[in-house]
Structures are given as structure tokens and as C-alpha cells.
Length: 160
Image 1: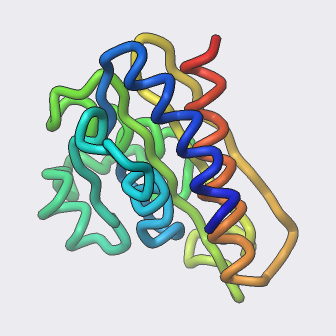
Image 2: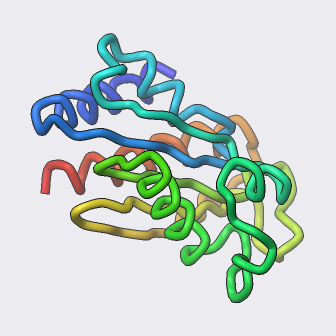
Image 3: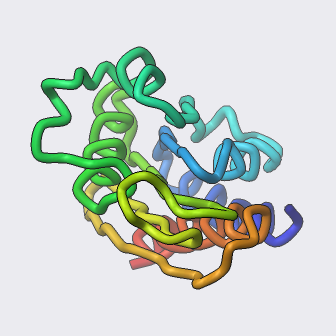
């Protein structure tokens, strides 16, 4: 968690300096991204909210994305990660939306992705989507790496 908080401190400094806000949707990280951002003192200046969107029901209730709204999307994909980030940014009227969706392990998901597969997206003044494949089935290690990678992706966009 210390590595995650270290990255989150850098993110927080950028957001505070810019007077900008963020909202987070995460799945296989189980709240680690939000926990890291909230571990930084003064988080209320930039963190508007977050959701662990782990199931279809969570997607419907927390994100207001219906089954019809999922036509052409599948979970654990770059387009879905972008949809989540965009939805969080819009619903919270945040400057930035950050999302993560994947398969932490020890097995893959029902979509055919192997353990260690994660897609993440940043939505804001600039956007980026990426896929990470760790090649590992270690659930806890993957959760940490997914969260760190998502935070680093956001940090690059903030610094760039």
C-alpha cells in the first residue's frame, strides 16, 4: 500500500495545484485506487467519489449503465474502461475520471481474458486507455500492480 500512497501523493499534489477533481470506478482493484487517493491528507480537495463496479448489478445501480447501454461493450475491455471513466467524470461533474476493469486471478474471466489482464482509462482534458497483461495469477499482486498502473497513467496525464 505504501507504493500506492506514494503515487497517490504525487497525483494529489497535481490535482490540488490545478484545483481539479477526480472520480474513480474500479473493478478488480477492489477499491485500492480510491483507498490510495483517500490516504493522502486533504483528499476532500480533489476526490469526489468512487465505486467498485464488480458485477452487472453494480454497473446498473452505481453507474446507471443498463444492459442496453452495454450493447457493443464487454467488461474487461478498453472501450468499457473508457465508458466507465467517462461515466464517472460526467456523473460527478469531475475534471477527471479514472477507471480499471480486469481479471485479478487466480483464474481468468468469463470473457476469455487470462488472470493478470486489466484495462484502465483516464477521461479528462486528455484521455488515454491502456491494457496491462502481467502474466501472473497472483490475485493480490495483480490488484496492487493494476492500481499502481492506473494511478501512474493518471499521473502521466496530469504531468503532461
